[in-house]
Picture 1 (spheres, rainbow, N blue to C red):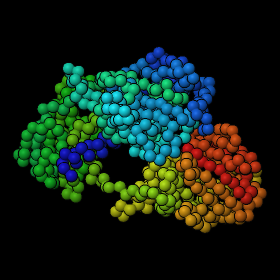
Picture 2: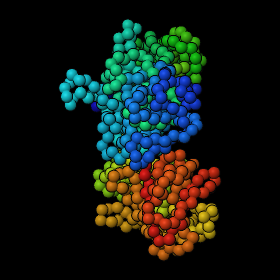
Picture 3: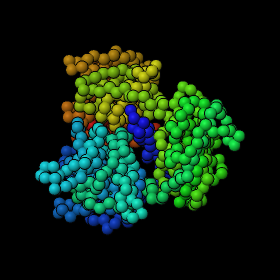
Picture 4: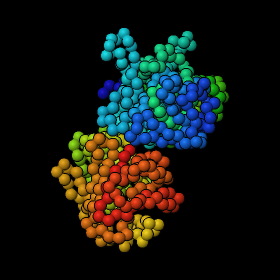
Length: 606
């Protein structure tokens, strides 16, 4: 690897940690109480209290009265139009929830020009640039018929959810750069796009506006939401607009001193080994491998007065930072500091000492300020010495792997069975409780924590994860439908009996609980749109209930279909099921339970 390549890779490793880490004070919420935040909204746009899509009928999105949801409901007359914000933006971090109607199509245009596609791509195996989360193609008729589209970017994987479910999107956008004469000197970039918790784009350069975005480019432009292609709803729109000018680090000089400096020395008494001028902060400017200190001095040209935040990383030793002759980050291997800076050319001083031989030299300094997204002032990141090549497990065929699995609450499932499928939909099962822990789309497992070096036995999902809540038994014996659910094994006689593999290498899980032998058979649907679960009780009896779901909300729809946990997923009870489900309150949340005699089949769709 060439040094230039290394610096570029390390820079973006560092920046990936910074992108979308906007301070709360910089964020603004787009009010969705009425439409005054938008320019001349057409009649297809309205404010609502909630939205619901139909899983079977194309283009259907129903809304409820209220506030907090922005809905696009195009009519059949073809009069629908796009929606533009009243504010203009340069660099921006954008975060929102959205819901697609079945078969629907929309998009988010940064600066009104660069489209991130929104589409009902539920179940698509190999997404293209025109699928959900894709960066739409550019368009040029002169390229000839069939070749007009070019320059689009497909998402890394399909992290899409089903129509009618809320999806979460984060975008970190860097606007094109122009000089004082108005000439473009740098293309726009999507620094990062995260869909449903999965990074689907990173550091993508946009050569120009995408199709439908016009041909001009400028430092500013409004957010634009496509409104003429299908029904879609939005909520929780939060953004941070970065329109201020960055400080410049100029007149930078350096001196290198040889020795082991665990504390900052008196530089005036030391003869330097090397010195000179430079345009960048870098540990690579020094030719000594270990036991040295670099002292940088220069000027920070501040163009906007206000509070600035600095993060300094100095692995293998220590570093410190002074601005305007005041200590901002005290001496240490890593640290952060805040300084209230005036407009002007301010003295800058940074030192980096390295004396730990087993780690590589690396210097990192980042800055954020009023209207300024955090960015890197040094040439490479720190902490890269710990970066290892990931150990990824694909599931080209049905694949089963046991591991520890850490869940969002901080608990560890110690007898987790991870089941992967070629449909790119996978799940984790807890043998200790007979519980479906989580399901996800995309790649299968990152086994780096388990197999790198000594390992800790755990693996991680690669994809958009749907988590089913705290560990709990699926089956319980209750005195009545309102009796509390017991998650303790005491009195249940629970005993796992492992699992059996079928001819297609898919496991069926076996256990006993309350003197009942259970076969728990979970299969990925052929269309990849969810899981089908069949519980068979060999010797079932009265009072056995299954807790199918719990969440903030549970909404019954038609024909045994339920929306679970604020429209996070659907649960579909088999049409032949005669038992009546019960939605009940439990510690401020909802539970869906159903009595089970000998067999129960239901599906989880997401």
